[in-house]
Length: 437
Image (cartoon, rainbow, N blue to C red):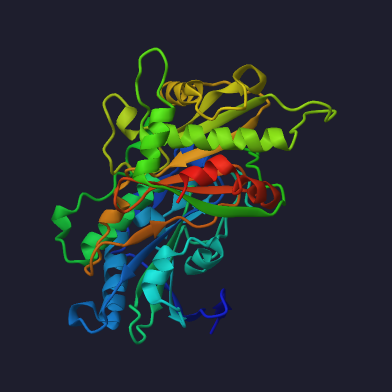
């Protein structure tokens, strides 16, 4: 058995590992699945997500052993519809031969405070232990080669119920970004949960795998290598919570001149974090060639879900990578000034960039945003209630921000990844500390 200790008090003990295959063999005419062009260009790592479910072991309906059995059974049944997830990548196609997904179960011991303590914890050194390791991090080649790694890896972590501490289940999932984005993963999780709680299969929409490979067909990428920013630097990921009242304050601060229009939550939080990032880089005198002057140009990318923006809109269960990274026009720091975070021009540029996909490529210092805002991941009920918290895990690239809803829906969690040195200064920013909880 593997034993992983990530705090003095808590230990994770891997109890079993197995491969879960579709309950029904994939028909021969579906055993080759073509990636779309956007799948080909997806970053070479997995999309990680963690769902926390407090479970009362005294409740017969939520007996842990019964939960484990239901999860296996329902996963196998769900994979019949999600057959590419059980396949393996070979060049630009997925061989849907029922190779299966990686599935493991673990016992979590000595959690002081139980499940509710974990739900309040945002330490990624703790959270990352609930998900399987990521086999895709250092694979930067596209359009060639074969991978024997499972496209989907799942770990079921069972917390013991001790004295007055609530036990529960933590589900950690990684899905290769080559097969789908966060919206796709949310669709899968909700369908798996519906199957687990007994929803008839004819009432579950299921995925649409037939749209993107035809809408955005693959291209020949032989010999093409796409750099994704892995530099060997030590990267830290930390969570910053913006509650509803602070977001309202930011929206008021960033009201756009000219039309007195308030930004939405994502625009306001993105613009503010961007400002803090610019302040950080200016403080460090981020120079270009000779280091004698500060770098003036800073830009932002936003990964925008294109399903609802297509004409006509694509079904929400369209599976695959269907996002485009917009590029916000770079800011001239000297022209805009760095003394005031309440700069309406920032949020206006964020809005304009999201609404109009731009193809500007300039050598600038970039900050990348991806928003999981309003994805219905908090609806995932496996039969013992909806999750009390959902979080991502560690992302391996610097200068990346993942935005997520809070369970209440009125706040935003910003999961920020940057170098260790940058994070040490970023998290001490006075303006940032004013707005985060």
